[in-house]
Length: 95
Image (cartoon, rainbow, N blue to C red; front, side, top):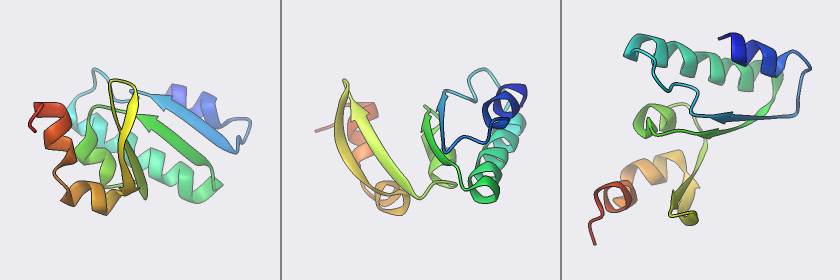
């Protein structure tokens, strides 16, 4: 939470977050995602998040980009990504 506070103190137009939930308990993960959504809505800040906790993140985002080996392999609304099989293909290496 402190890192998020430090990130928004200057009222940025864009906020970049790299694994903000790494090492947190499931309860704290949920709280961090709630705060990220709140920052976006209240401050109208564009937020880019790199995260492995994808399913939880897709619940609070409007758009998603899926990277595989550094290349964008899918993009679209969070709902489209959630409903597609791309996450299974990328993370379980299914063809």
